[in-house]
Image (tube, rainbow, N blue to C red; front, side, top):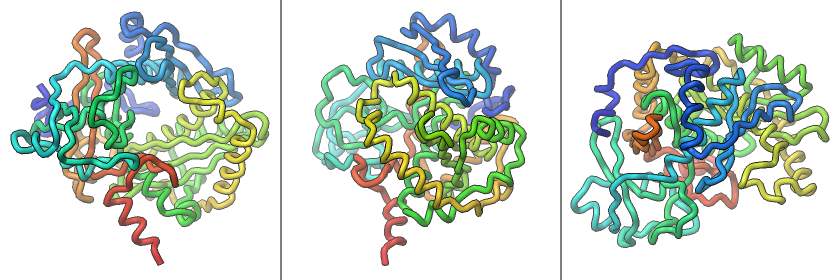
Length: 416
């Protein structure tokens, strides 16, 4: 039952693996468990695409041909087992969000809210293409607020990733995507990963809205990085002749978030790519940003993602991206000290999530809504988190997204 998922009542969940990521099981043990499930999940191949790039950081692609969304999922890690687990988990979470087995209600917000607790839709990321209408019927499903353990209803389109069926009536009001969707060895492991992803997207959006001031005023001084795993990976980029710029984009939540840009010194070898990461432990957040940039490089080279169009590889588009990324490189100023960031590293996932929840509550974010998508047939915890009040993915002019209250406050401060 979701009501047993409250952060206050959940038994302690101890971390047993902390090399580059915090998990309840080592990747090798998780991989052994997952491999037997691959056929039933429709995963036909795990492709090690590490060798496509000169960097050498493990990157793996999981292929699921009968997917109802993307047929390939990527994973990365400090070693090959971690990268394989990362790719499989991403594929599993998509599989589960495509096949939601939960009671739904078809009603308008005005009708449903008279009888049942409903999420405050004004605090959800809304689409720029279609405005929300309280009288418009749509599909709803139930989630659980991990602060209060209260059950409440939220729009189904924020959770489902089945893109093979006709769009249900009333859909299109919200900026729906896979942000906040995660799988893990334990429910709290998946929940933590999902929450950090949403905090990351919020921070990146707020940072982007600050414009060029953000590029010059938030650069991380990589010479101040004192974590062994981070230092080793930074040296690996240097040996591969890949230059890096990292920005500390941590927002008012205080949960560490980094945005990384990797630019190859040989422009013909690979295009520039970004990576971002969030975690209460800044070292883990930085590793996630660096490894995500590495994953993005290998993914672009492989060219197998369903959502990569010919436009992505058009010479004019690639030249435009290179010019813009070189501008970002030139604007970077290494003014932020890695050691000055807030640092939370509990022995349990509960401690990290409690700290994160307190950080969010301090800026007016008072709900962590979990939709438990775990399927008994597989026994792999999968959760979709929705955090009302956090910003969605703003990627500049033309984004299908209406900036929320936090973004509007940033914009207001930029006005003359």
